[in-house]
Image (cartoon, rainbow over all chains, first blue to last red; front, side, top):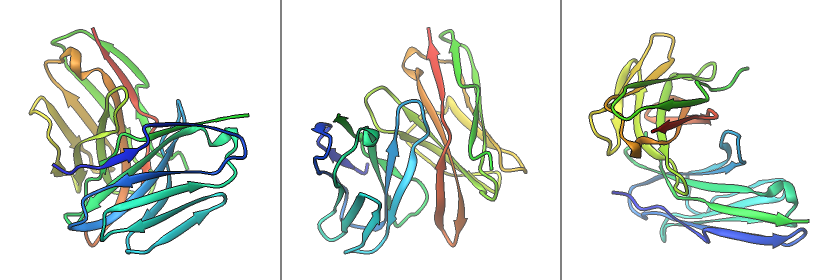
Amino acid sequence: ILNVEQSPQSLHVQEGDSTNFTCSFPSSNFYALHWYRWETAKSPEALFVMTLNGDEKKKGRISATLNTKEGYSYLYIKGSQPEDSATYLCAFTHTNAGKSTFGDGTTLTVKP
Amino acid sequence: DAGVTQSPTHLIKTRGQQVTLRCSPKSGHDTVSWYQQALGQGPQFIFQYYEEEERQRGNFPDRFSGHQFPNYSSELNVNALLLGDSALYLCASSFLVQGVLYGYTFGSGTRLTVV
């Protein structure tokens, strides 16, 4: 059983604050890590897929880093906006590529 | 592009009944994965279909079965429904190249309630 853990479980910030959260995954047999953004009543939306240790990806105000040796990834949001409010899921794929194991998500609420 | 479409969006069934959920993948995708998401938890992998065969399976009982059709669409069947099967069922499509999945895209899900 692969454990993918996300922290914190939930986060409340003020508009304009920068924030980050963590995804921890097994450091062995790593293949890829995905980040998804999931707004209520919508489909999860793919943000990033990272495959190499040290990868850094950026999309607007959102960025992510990857450390496969120690088994963690950080997601950063700079200058949070109310529209960033969503659940952010990470998913780990190991070398038996195919299924992805998801964390339980971090729910972000940005107050105006 | 319609993306991944799932039907129905909501469903209420009685304990012991059987249910079939449907998924049409995004155009160009050949692999369909099914997930169950209980309230407050991340999606749990049920199984994945490629070339009309079950390619991988998660830790779900045999009551959960599936099928993929030649047009890549897929069905998830659950027999002898239990109250604990109430959840959001997500379908994700992708395309497989040399063992790696690309373009993972989710549908909006089917909300199943078992009473």
